[in-house]
Length: 518
Ligand SMILES: Cc1cc2nc3c(=O)[nH]c(=O)nc-3n(C[C@H](O)[C@H](O)[C@H](O)COP(=O)(O)OP(=O)(O)OC[C@H]3O[C@@H](n4cnc5c(N)ncnc54)[C@H](O)[C@@H]3O)c2cc1C
Ligand SMILES: NC(=O)c1ccc[n+]([C@@H]2O[C@H](COP(=O)([O-])OP(=O)(O)OC[C@H]3O[C@@H](n4cnc5c(N)ncnc54)[C@H](OP(=O)(O)O)[C@@H]3O)[C@@H](O)[C@H]2O)c1
Image (cartoon, rainbow, N blue to C red; front, side, top):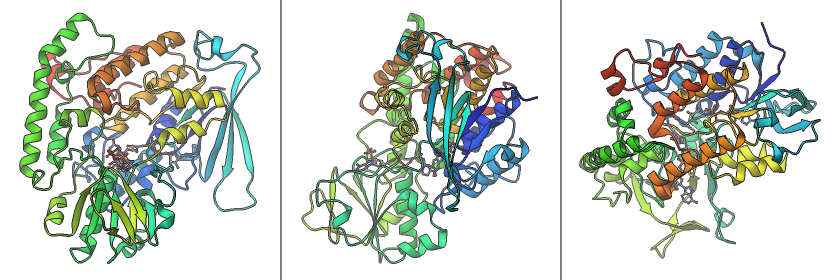
């Protein structure tokens, strides 16, 4: 039985699928707008070598396990996409999706004359819906048919699921005449490379001098893929400004097994009482020991010292900043056999036949330069709003969102998929459950000032922990269970999900623990 309220979901990646599934479950009839012709978002266009880098037990829907045929802990991108498709079919999500339909902007329209800045409660009432406020969703067909026109839909609530790591590449700025325009070769972003057909991509790089920029997951995967294809006769060069800790699969599995309540006792929490503060101080040497042991292990299994690749920051800071990167298994073998060169350089610029990097007078000769420099997710989110007031809300707040999905000053709207986490599917599913519980009136939001206080406390807490590595999208990775406790409390369900005390303290929490929360 559908409620009369209209809900729009923008995007049919993991976040959009989850939002739609739980909205349907609560009796809403959401419309999902998807710019592409397929579901899955980032998983629909990846490098050939892309695999999940979260163990699959932590990257699964709470009520829809991976099929038994998928045995490996880190399924490949095709298996991930098949899993998402099976989920969408099973929960009858596909009929709700309008494919090839890009939302060009969203505009809040209200008949109320009250100034939004004077609101004490979210949207003026603290309720998810308002009799006077609606969102206009402006869409444009993008299936290449010139006769298609713009359409406007009016809805009561919007769930923005447009993805943080897609669509809008981050390309560095260069001084005049030092950027890609002076280079005779080809320049592209890892996103463009991933979007190519695998054979065409292999053909593009074959026997070319390829330079890859960056040292996070896209960069190391791409560099390894190029080095594997071209070998030592046409070596690939990786140019980067920061060395990061990267790990093998087995170590990451171990880290995930440690995501239990006992580990969370070692972290300071926003607004914690004296006892928890003291306990975290008392237990914090364990974190230092854990971090140091892992650093020693990584220095042992990888030739980090030999290639001057020991990061300046601790492993603990690396994972607390949501930067998890599994290194391709043969990465340092390729460095050793001369198929891959590593060049650290704080800055670089283009010249006619390649790149000028720090400390070298001759150019790094290149035919192709690939920026694996990430995405401008915040800019993408900001520009979907028509109102400059909401654009400013997104751009100027250095703080995360309330419960990582509600902006206290943007009414009748939630944002999913913008909070980084070691297992995004898991954390997004919890927030989808929370939002749809809110939409069906199971709880109310606190006053705007309380929400702003809460997000500020998270920011302060996180800044104290990771200092200069603070990013607003990464506030809760070390406190996943604590965050889920808050969501459960809001939804009125039991937050302790294990069946006995020792398991509660020492066994890792994962999606399956929250299966019965809906
Ligand atoms: C290659 C890659 C591998 C990853 N691996 C992992 C991993 O192992 N573990 C992990 O936790 N995270 C991983 N991530 C992070 C990943 O982003 C999330 O896990 C998750 O898939 C994001 O889903 P999403 O739905 O929020 O966003 P997306 O997957 O980006 O989906 C957004 C969707 O919205 C659509 N859209 C965007 N704008 C509009 C618009 N204006 N109108 C209509 N539709 C629009 C897009 O077309 C897209 O389909 C990975 C990311 C990448 C890029
Ligand atoms: N499962 C998978 O296999 C997989 C594959 C790809 C991506 N992903 C995920 O997708 C997300 C995006 O990953 P990503 O690797 O594309 O992007 P990213 O994590 O944002 O990394 C961007 C890289 O580019 C560098 N960079 C940014 N601006 C630069 C500049 N101006 N000059 C020089 N270097 C610059 C950064 O260096 P600094 O560190 O110095 O800032 C960093 O090394 C991550 O969550 C990642 O885990 C997963």
